[in-house]
Amino acid sequence: MNCLSYTVLPDKHSDEVRHYSDDQLQTLSIAEIQAELQAEIEEHQQQIKALQQQLVAITGGSTDG
Image (cartoon, rainbow, N blue to C red; front, side, top):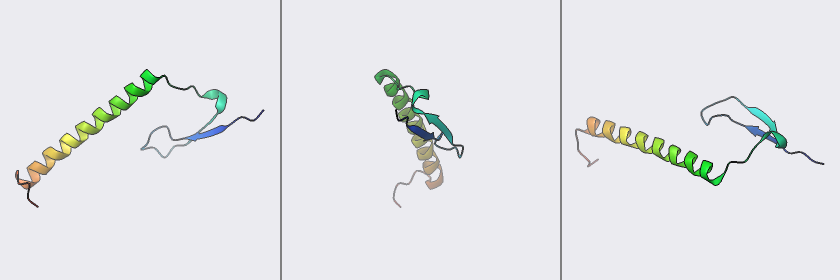
């Protein structure tokens, strides 16, 4: 029987690499995937808001380039 092997970055900002075999991984439920995605969306929205506030501070509120 063939066993698949996976190479994974634990975090998208990490240089660390981990190796797992097929039997060491567990799939997420739909609810878990949705929760992960929602949390990531909210994090990005917060980053966008912070960047928009910085842009307003830099430009003094002017939106024309």
